[in-house]
Length: 465
Image: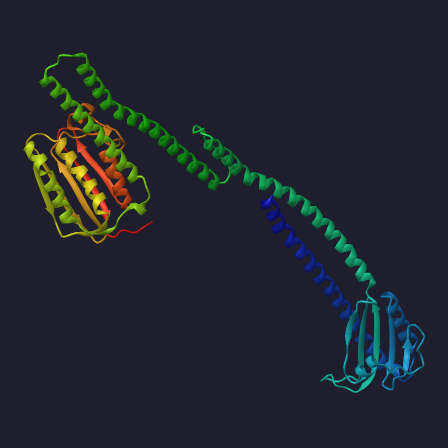
Protein backbone atom coordinates (compact mmCIF):
# COMPACT_ATOMS: atom_id res chain seq x y z
CA UNK A 1 0.00 0.00 0.00
CA UNK A 2 2.87 2.39 0.76
CA UNK A 3 4.33 1.75 -2.68
CA UNK A 4 0.89 2.16 -4.25
CA UNK A 5 0.27 5.52 -2.56
CA UNK A 6 3.77 6.70 -3.40
CA UNK A 7 3.32 5.85 -7.08
CA UNK A 8 -0.12 7.51 -7.17
CA UNK A 9 1.25 10.64 -5.50
CA UNK A 10 4.18 10.82 -7.90
CA UNK A 11 1.84 10.43 -10.87
CA UNK A 12 -1.20 12.52 -9.84
CA UNK A 13 0.36 15.49 -8.03
CA UNK A 14 2.43 16.64 -11.04
CA UNK A 15 -0.62 16.32 -13.29
CA UNK A 16 -2.76 18.41 -10.90
CA UNK A 17 -0.02 20.99 -10.65
CA UNK A 18 0.37 21.15 -14.43
CA UNK A 19 -3.41 21.36 -14.82
CA UNK A 20 -3.69 24.33 -12.47
CA UNK A 21 -0.62 26.05 -13.88
CA UNK A 22 -1.63 25.52 -17.51
CA UNK A 23 -5.24 26.68 -17.13
CA UNK A 24 -4.30 29.78 -15.12
CA UNK A 25 -1.57 30.60 -17.61
CA UNK A 26 -3.95 30.14 -20.51
CA UNK A 27 -6.62 32.34 -18.87
CA UNK A 28 -4.15 35.13 -18.15
CA UNK A 29 -2.92 34.86 -21.71
CA UNK A 30 -6.36 35.22 -23.32
CA UNK A 31 -7.22 38.13 -20.98
CA UNK A 32 -4.00 39.81 -22.04
CA UNK A 33 -4.98 39.18 -25.67
CA UNK A 34 -8.39 40.79 -24.97
CA UNK A 35 -6.67 43.87 -23.51
CA UNK A 36 -4.35 44.08 -26.55
CA UNK A 37 -7.34 43.72 -28.87
CA UNK A 38 -9.17 46.57 -27.12
CA UNK A 39 -6.04 48.77 -27.14
CA UNK A 40 -5.56 48.13 -30.89
CA UNK A 41 -9.20 49.04 -31.49
CA UNK A 42 -8.74 52.19 -29.44
CA UNK A 43 -5.83 53.20 -31.68
CA UNK A 44 -7.92 52.67 -34.84
CA UNK A 45 -11.00 54.51 -33.60
CA UNK A 46 -8.88 57.33 -32.17
CA UNK A 47 -7.33 57.93 -35.60
CA UNK A 48 -10.80 58.20 -37.14
CA UNK A 49 -11.84 60.63 -34.41
CA UNK A 50 -8.88 62.88 -35.12
CA UNK A 51 -9.51 62.81 -38.85
CA UNK A 52 -13.21 63.77 -38.46
CA UNK A 53 -12.82 66.24 -35.57
CA UNK A 54 -15.11 63.94 -33.63
CA UNK A 55 -13.93 65.24 -30.23
CA UNK A 56 -14.78 68.86 -31.20
CA UNK A 57 -18.33 67.98 -32.31
CA UNK A 58 -17.69 66.77 -35.84
CA UNK A 59 -19.75 64.16 -37.71
CA UNK A 60 -20.27 61.28 -35.28
CA UNK A 61 -22.85 58.92 -36.75
CA UNK A 62 -20.37 56.50 -38.36
CA UNK A 63 -18.01 56.50 -35.39
CA UNK A 64 -20.89 56.18 -32.93
CA UNK A 65 -22.15 53.16 -34.84
CA UNK A 66 -18.72 51.53 -34.88
CA UNK A 67 -18.31 52.12 -31.15
CA UNK A 68 -21.78 50.71 -30.41
CA UNK A 69 -21.04 47.66 -32.56
CA UNK A 70 -17.68 46.97 -30.86
CA UNK A 71 -19.20 47.50 -27.42
CA UNK A 72 -22.04 45.13 -28.18
CA UNK A 73 -19.68 42.55 -29.59
CA UNK A 74 -17.92 42.20 -26.21
CA UNK A 75 -20.90 43.11 -24.00
CA UNK A 76 -19.11 46.16 -22.69
CA UNK A 77 -19.34 49.93 -22.25
CA UNK A 78 -17.27 52.59 -24.01
CA UNK A 79 -17.06 56.24 -22.91
CA UNK A 80 -15.29 58.89 -25.04
CA UNK A 81 -14.30 62.29 -23.59
CA UNK A 82 -12.34 65.27 -24.94
CA UNK A 83 -9.57 67.08 -23.12
CA UNK A 84 -12.15 69.22 -21.29
CA UNK A 85 -13.81 66.11 -19.75
CA UNK A 86 -16.88 66.52 -21.99
CA UNK A 87 -18.45 63.10 -22.75
CA UNK A 88 -18.84 62.76 -26.51
CA UNK A 89 -20.04 59.16 -26.46
CA UNK A 90 -21.40 56.73 -23.83
CA UNK A 91 -22.68 53.47 -25.21
CA UNK A 92 -25.04 53.28 -22.25
CA UNK A 93 -26.33 56.80 -23.12
CA UNK A 94 -26.17 57.86 -19.48
CA UNK A 95 -23.29 60.38 -19.64
CA UNK A 96 -23.46 61.69 -23.22
CA UNK A 97 -23.19 65.50 -23.23
CA UNK A 98 -22.11 65.65 -19.61
CA UNK A 99 -18.73 66.08 -17.99
CA UNK A 100 -16.92 63.04 -16.54
CA UNK A 101 -14.33 63.72 -13.91
CA UNK A 102 -13.05 60.52 -12.37
CA UNK A 103 -9.72 59.20 -11.13
CA UNK A 104 -9.28 57.02 -14.20
CA UNK A 105 -10.03 59.94 -16.58
CA UNK A 106 -7.77 62.37 -14.73
CA UNK A 107 -4.88 59.88 -14.71
CA UNK A 108 -5.42 59.09 -18.37
CA UNK A 109 -5.43 62.78 -19.34
CA UNK A 110 -2.26 63.18 -17.30
CA UNK A 111 -0.60 60.75 -19.73
CA UNK A 112 -1.04 57.66 -17.53
CA UNK A 113 -2.83 54.96 -19.48
CA UNK A 114 -4.09 52.05 -17.37
CA UNK A 115 -5.40 48.53 -17.92
CA UNK A 116 -6.84 46.29 -15.21
CA UNK A 117 -8.89 43.13 -14.81
CA UNK A 118 -11.58 43.36 -12.16
CA UNK A 119 -12.35 39.89 -10.87
CA UNK A 120 -15.53 40.93 -9.04
CA UNK A 121 -17.26 42.28 -12.17
CA UNK A 122 -15.32 40.01 -14.54
CA UNK A 123 -14.42 43.01 -16.71
CA UNK A 124 -11.34 44.46 -18.32
CA UNK A 125 -10.88 48.19 -17.68
CA UNK A 126 -8.73 50.10 -20.14
CA UNK A 127 -8.06 53.80 -20.66
CA UNK A 128 -6.70 54.90 -24.04
CA UNK A 129 -5.33 58.43 -24.51
CA UNK A 130 -6.06 60.15 -27.83
CA UNK A 131 -3.15 62.32 -29.08
CA UNK A 132 -2.27 64.31 -32.14
CA UNK A 133 0.01 62.41 -34.49
CA UNK A 134 3.62 62.75 -33.37
CA UNK A 135 6.70 60.78 -34.34
CA UNK A 136 8.00 60.53 -30.78
CA UNK A 137 4.53 59.64 -29.36
CA UNK A 138 4.29 62.81 -27.24
CA UNK A 139 1.70 64.75 -29.14
CA UNK A 140 -0.95 66.96 -27.56
CA UNK A 141 -3.66 65.07 -25.62
CA UNK A 142 -7.02 65.55 -27.35
CA UNK A 143 -9.17 63.17 -25.28
CA UNK A 144 -9.51 59.64 -24.04
CA UNK A 145 -11.50 56.44 -24.46
CA UNK A 146 -12.60 54.50 -21.40
CA UNK A 147 -13.34 50.81 -22.09
CA UNK A 148 -15.28 48.50 -19.76
CA UNK A 149 -15.25 45.17 -21.63
CA UNK A 150 -16.85 42.03 -20.21
CA UNK A 151 -14.77 38.82 -19.94
CA UNK A 152 -17.72 36.56 -19.22
CA UNK A 153 -17.30 34.84 -22.56
CA UNK A 154 -13.66 34.15 -21.63
CA UNK A 155 -14.72 32.92 -18.19
CA UNK A 156 -17.27 30.58 -19.76
CA UNK A 157 -14.55 29.27 -22.06
CA UNK A 158 -12.27 28.93 -19.04
CA UNK A 159 -14.92 26.97 -17.11
CA UNK A 160 -15.52 24.70 -20.10
CA UNK A 161 -11.81 24.02 -20.53
CA UNK A 162 -11.43 23.48 -16.79
CA UNK A 163 -14.22 20.92 -16.75
CA UNK A 164 -12.83 19.18 -19.80
CA UNK A 165 -9.32 19.07 -18.39
CA UNK A 166 -10.66 17.95 -15.01
CA UNK A 167 -12.48 15.04 -16.63
CA UNK A 168 -9.33 14.17 -18.58
CA UNK A 169 -7.25 14.35 -15.41
CA UNK A 170 -9.75 12.19 -13.54
CA UNK A 171 -9.63 9.67 -16.38
CA UNK A 172 -5.85 9.72 -16.42
CA UNK A 173 -5.86 9.47 -12.62
CA UNK A 174 -8.06 6.36 -12.73
CA UNK A 175 -5.79 4.78 -15.32
CA UNK A 176 -2.72 5.71 -13.29
CA UNK A 177 -4.25 4.30 -10.11
CA UNK A 178 -4.98 1.05 -11.92
CA UNK A 179 -1.49 0.94 -13.44
CA UNK A 180 0.04 1.84 -10.06
CA UNK A 181 -1.89 -0.98 -8.43
CA UNK A 182 -0.74 -3.44 -11.08
CA UNK A 183 2.87 -2.24 -10.90
CA UNK A 184 2.85 -2.22 -7.09
CA UNK A 185 1.58 -5.79 -7.03
CA UNK A 186 4.14 -6.73 -9.68
CA UNK A 187 6.95 -5.13 -7.70
CA UNK A 188 5.99 -6.53 -4.31
CA UNK A 189 4.90 -10.05 -5.27
CA UNK A 190 8.48 -11.40 -5.64
CA UNK A 191 9.37 -10.02 -2.22
CA UNK A 192 6.23 -11.52 -0.68
CA UNK A 193 7.21 -14.86 -2.19
CA UNK A 194 10.68 -14.45 -0.75
CA UNK A 195 9.22 -13.54 2.67
CA UNK A 196 7.10 -16.70 2.57
CA UNK A 197 10.16 -18.76 1.65
CA UNK A 198 12.15 -17.21 4.49
CA UNK A 199 9.33 -18.01 6.89
CA UNK A 200 9.33 -21.62 5.69
CA UNK A 201 13.09 -21.78 6.14
CA UNK A 202 12.63 -20.41 9.65
CA UNK A 203 10.28 -23.34 10.24
CA UNK A 204 13.04 -25.73 9.15
CA UNK A 205 12.13 -26.38 5.49
CA UNK A 206 15.60 -26.00 3.98
CA UNK A 207 14.55 -27.59 0.69
CA UNK A 208 12.73 -24.38 -0.29
CA UNK A 209 13.82 -22.61 -3.47
CA UNK A 210 12.80 -19.25 -4.88
CA UNK A 211 12.38 -18.60 -8.60
CA UNK A 212 11.63 -14.89 -8.95
CA UNK A 213 11.03 -13.43 -12.39
CA UNK A 214 10.83 -9.82 -13.49
CA UNK A 215 13.47 -7.16 -13.50
CA UNK A 216 17.09 -8.26 -13.68
CA UNK A 217 17.66 -6.96 -10.14
CA UNK A 218 14.86 -9.17 -8.83
CA UNK A 219 16.32 -12.18 -10.61
CA UNK A 220 19.72 -11.37 -9.11
CA UNK A 221 18.13 -11.30 -5.65
CA UNK A 222 16.53 -14.67 -6.41
CA UNK A 223 19.88 -16.15 -7.43
CA UNK A 224 21.61 -14.69 -4.37
CA UNK A 225 18.85 -16.03 -2.13
CA UNK A 226 19.11 -19.52 -3.60
CA UNK A 227 22.89 -19.39 -3.22
CA UNK A 228 22.42 -18.46 0.43
CA UNK A 229 19.85 -21.22 0.79
CA UNK A 230 22.22 -23.80 -0.66
CA UNK A 231 24.86 -22.61 1.77
CA UNK A 232 22.37 -22.98 4.64
CA UNK A 233 21.60 -26.49 3.48
CA UNK A 234 25.31 -27.28 3.41
CA UNK A 235 25.72 -25.81 6.89
CA UNK A 236 22.77 -27.81 8.20
CA UNK A 237 24.17 -30.98 6.65
CA UNK A 238 27.58 -30.13 8.08
CA UNK A 239 26.04 -29.50 11.49
CA UNK A 240 24.27 -32.86 11.47
CA UNK A 241 27.43 -34.58 10.29
CA UNK A 242 29.43 -32.77 12.96
CA UNK A 243 27.05 -33.89 15.72
CA UNK A 244 27.23 -37.44 14.41
CA UNK A 245 31.02 -37.35 14.23
CA UNK A 246 31.33 -35.84 17.70
CA UNK A 247 29.10 -38.56 19.10
CA UNK A 248 31.12 -41.23 17.34
CA UNK A 249 34.52 -39.80 18.33
CA UNK A 250 33.55 -39.41 21.97
CA UNK A 251 31.92 -42.82 22.08
CA UNK A 252 34.85 -44.74 20.55
CA UNK A 253 37.29 -44.34 23.49
CA UNK A 254 34.47 -45.05 25.94
CA UNK A 255 33.62 -48.24 24.05
CA UNK A 256 37.27 -49.32 24.13
CA UNK A 257 37.50 -48.64 27.86
CA UNK A 258 34.25 -50.58 28.45
CA UNK A 259 35.60 -53.57 26.49
CA UNK A 260 38.89 -53.52 28.43
CA UNK A 261 37.15 -53.18 31.77
CA UNK A 262 34.68 -55.99 30.97
CA UNK A 263 37.58 -58.21 29.90
CA UNK A 264 39.31 -57.67 33.25
CA UNK A 265 36.11 -58.30 35.17
CA UNK A 266 35.55 -61.59 33.35
CA UNK A 267 39.01 -62.84 34.37
CA UNK A 268 38.91 -63.27 38.14
CA UNK A 269 42.46 -64.66 38.28
CA UNK A 270 44.06 -62.39 35.67
CA UNK A 271 47.80 -61.87 36.23
CA UNK A 272 49.14 -58.50 37.36
CA UNK A 273 50.92 -57.98 34.05
CA UNK A 274 47.58 -58.23 32.19
CA UNK A 275 45.99 -55.75 34.59
CA UNK A 276 48.82 -53.33 33.97
CA UNK A 277 48.57 -53.74 30.21
CA UNK A 278 44.81 -53.21 30.19
CA UNK A 279 45.04 -50.26 32.60
CA UNK A 280 47.70 -48.72 30.36
CA UNK A 281 45.35 -49.11 27.37
CA UNK A 282 42.50 -47.58 29.39
CA UNK A 283 44.81 -44.66 30.30
CA UNK A 284 45.61 -44.13 26.62
CA UNK A 285 41.91 -44.09 25.73
CA UNK A 286 41.30 -41.55 28.51
CA UNK A 287 44.09 -39.39 27.06
CA UNK A 288 42.52 -39.73 23.64
CA UNK A 289 39.11 -38.71 25.02
CA UNK A 290 40.74 -35.72 26.74
CA UNK A 291 42.45 -34.68 23.49
CA UNK A 292 39.16 -34.80 21.59
CA UNK A 293 37.42 -32.73 24.26
CA UNK A 294 40.21 -30.13 24.31
CA UNK A 295 40.11 -29.84 20.52
CA UNK A 296 36.34 -29.43 20.63
CA UNK A 297 36.67 -26.69 23.21
CA UNK A 298 39.28 -24.95 21.05
CA UNK A 299 36.98 -25.21 18.05
CA UNK A 300 34.08 -23.70 20.01
CA UNK A 301 36.32 -20.80 21.01
CA UNK A 302 37.28 -20.30 17.39
CA UNK A 303 33.60 -19.97 16.46
CA UNK A 304 33.16 -17.01 18.79
CA UNK A 305 33.48 -13.39 17.72
CA UNK A 306 36.72 -11.58 17.01
CA UNK A 307 36.41 -9.85 20.39
CA UNK A 308 38.10 -12.99 21.84
CA UNK A 309 41.31 -12.18 19.98
CA UNK A 310 44.11 -10.69 22.11
CA UNK A 311 45.85 -8.62 19.47
CA UNK A 312 49.43 -7.58 20.15
CA UNK A 313 52.61 -6.92 18.23
CA UNK A 314 54.33 -10.31 17.77
CA UNK A 315 57.73 -11.25 16.37
CA UNK A 316 56.78 -13.98 13.89
CA UNK A 317 60.39 -15.17 13.49
CA UNK A 318 60.66 -15.92 17.22
CA UNK A 319 57.22 -17.51 17.22
CA UNK A 320 58.18 -19.99 14.48
CA UNK A 321 61.51 -20.79 16.10
CA UNK A 322 59.69 -21.58 19.34
CA UNK A 323 57.24 -23.88 17.54
CA UNK A 324 59.98 -25.83 15.77
CA UNK A 325 62.02 -26.11 18.95
CA UNK A 326 59.05 -27.60 20.79
CA UNK A 327 58.25 -30.08 17.98
CA UNK A 328 61.85 -31.08 17.25
CA UNK A 329 61.82 -34.05 19.68
CA UNK A 330 58.78 -35.51 17.87
CA UNK A 331 60.54 -35.11 14.51
CA UNK A 332 63.79 -36.62 15.84
CA UNK A 333 62.00 -39.84 16.80
CA UNK A 334 61.29 -40.42 13.09
CA UNK A 335 64.54 -38.91 11.87
CA UNK A 336 62.68 -36.02 10.18
CA UNK A 337 64.66 -32.84 9.53
CA UNK A 338 63.02 -29.53 10.54
CA UNK A 339 64.21 -26.45 8.63
CA UNK A 340 63.17 -22.80 9.19
CA UNK A 341 63.98 -20.30 6.47
CA UNK A 342 63.25 -16.62 7.20
CA UNK A 343 63.80 -14.10 4.42
CA UNK A 344 63.43 -11.03 6.66
CA UNK A 345 62.43 -10.00 10.19
CA UNK A 346 58.64 -9.91 10.49
CA UNK A 347 56.53 -8.26 13.19
CA UNK A 348 52.75 -8.42 12.92
CA UNK A 349 49.62 -7.64 14.92
CA UNK A 350 47.99 -10.95 15.91
CA UNK A 351 46.88 -13.20 18.74
CA UNK A 352 50.10 -15.01 19.64
CA UNK A 353 48.45 -17.93 21.46
CA UNK A 354 45.94 -18.71 18.71
CA UNK A 355 48.42 -18.21 15.87
CA UNK A 356 50.89 -20.50 17.64
CA UNK A 357 48.19 -23.18 17.84
CA UNK A 358 47.37 -22.81 14.12
CA UNK A 359 50.96 -23.00 12.89
CA UNK A 360 51.80 -25.79 15.34
CA UNK A 361 48.98 -27.88 13.88
CA UNK A 362 50.43 -27.45 10.39
CA UNK A 363 53.99 -28.36 11.40
CA UNK A 364 52.85 -31.26 13.59
CA UNK A 365 50.73 -32.67 10.75
CA UNK A 366 53.71 -32.35 8.41
CA UNK A 367 55.70 -34.48 10.87
CA UNK A 368 52.97 -37.04 11.56
CA UNK A 369 52.08 -37.66 7.93
CA UNK A 370 55.67 -37.76 6.69
CA UNK A 371 57.95 -40.63 5.77
CA UNK A 372 60.79 -41.77 8.02
CA UNK A 373 63.93 -39.81 7.21
CA UNK A 374 61.94 -37.08 5.49
CA UNK A 375 62.02 -33.31 5.92
CA UNK A 376 59.73 -30.40 6.85
CA UNK A 377 60.60 -26.89 5.65
CA UNK A 378 58.94 -23.81 7.16
CA UNK A 379 59.38 -20.55 5.24
CA UNK A 380 58.60 -16.99 6.40
CA UNK A 381 58.39 -13.98 4.09
CA UNK A 382 56.54 -10.67 3.98
CA UNK A 383 55.70 -7.67 1.84
CA UNK A 384 54.31 -4.24 2.74
CA UNK A 385 50.87 -5.64 3.59
CA UNK A 386 51.00 -9.37 4.48
CA UNK A 387 53.31 -11.97 5.93
CA UNK A 388 53.47 -15.45 4.43
CA UNK A 389 54.17 -18.79 6.12
CA UNK A 390 54.55 -22.00 4.09
CA UNK A 391 54.89 -25.47 5.58
CA UNK A 392 56.33 -27.85 3.02
CA UNK A 393 56.96 -31.56 3.64
CA UNK A 394 58.12 -34.72 1.89
CA UNK A 395 55.22 -36.75 3.23
CA UNK A 396 52.60 -39.06 1.86
CA UNK A 397 50.56 -36.30 0.23
CA UNK A 398 46.82 -35.77 -0.08
CA UNK A 399 44.76 -37.06 -3.05
CA UNK A 400 43.39 -34.19 -5.13
CA UNK A 401 39.75 -35.22 -4.62
CA UNK A 402 40.11 -34.84 -0.85
CA UNK A 403 41.95 -31.51 -0.74
CA UNK A 404 38.74 -29.45 -0.60
CA UNK A 405 37.48 -31.41 2.42
CA UNK A 406 40.49 -31.58 4.71
CA UNK A 407 39.46 -28.38 6.56
CA UNK A 408 36.08 -29.88 7.51
CA UNK A 409 35.64 -30.97 11.11
CA UNK A 410 36.50 -34.60 11.84
CA UNK A 411 37.38 -35.22 8.20
CA UNK A 412 40.27 -37.69 7.73
CA UNK A 413 41.78 -38.83 4.45
CA UNK A 414 43.19 -42.00 6.03
CA UNK A 415 41.25 -42.85 9.18
CA UNK A 416 43.45 -45.81 10.09
CA UNK A 417 46.64 -43.73 9.92
CA UNK A 418 44.94 -40.91 11.85
CA UNK A 419 44.16 -43.25 14.70
CA UNK A 420 47.74 -44.47 14.71
CA UNK A 421 49.06 -40.91 14.94
CA UNK A 422 46.45 -39.85 17.49
CA UNK A 423 44.66 -37.32 15.27
CA UNK A 424 41.12 -36.15 16.03
CA UNK A 425 40.33 -34.62 12.62
CA UNK A 426 39.86 -31.15 14.15
CA UNK A 427 43.35 -29.66 13.80
CA UNK A 428 43.05 -28.23 10.29
CA UNK A 429 39.54 -26.93 11.00
CA UNK A 430 40.89 -25.08 14.04
CA UNK A 431 43.81 -23.75 12.00
CA UNK A 432 41.57 -22.41 9.23
CA UNK A 433 39.27 -20.70 11.75
CA UNK A 434 42.22 -18.99 13.44
CA UNK A 435 43.63 -17.77 10.11
CA UNK A 436 40.23 -16.42 9.06
CA UNK A 437 39.80 -14.68 12.42
CA UNK A 438 42.98 -12.77 11.54
CA UNK A 439 41.44 -11.93 8.10
CA UNK A 440 43.93 -14.21 6.42
CA UNK A 441 43.77 -17.13 4.00
CA UNK A 442 45.12 -20.68 3.88
CA UNK A 443 45.68 -22.87 0.82
CA UNK A 444 46.94 -26.40 0.23
CA UNK A 445 48.82 -27.94 -2.66
CA UNK A 446 49.69 -31.62 -2.60
CA UNK A 447 50.57 -34.69 -4.65
CA UNK A 448 50.37 -38.27 -3.45
CA UNK A 449 53.77 -39.65 -2.37
CA UNK A 450 55.46 -36.33 -3.19
CA UNK A 451 54.47 -34.15 -0.26
CA UNK A 452 52.18 -31.32 0.80
CA UNK A 453 52.53 -27.54 1.02
CA UNK A 454 50.28 -25.39 3.21
CA UNK A 455 50.43 -21.64 2.48
CA UNK A 456 49.19 -19.10 5.03
CA UNK A 457 48.76 -15.39 4.34
CA UNK A 458 47.93 -12.97 7.20
CA UNK A 459 47.84 -9.13 7.26
CA UNK A 460 50.69 -7.43 9.10
CA UNK A 461 48.23 -4.94 10.59
CA UNK A 462 45.04 -6.26 12.16
CA UNK A 463 41.95 -4.22 11.26
CA UNK A 464 38.79 -5.05 13.17
CA UNK A 465 35.82 -5.50 10.86
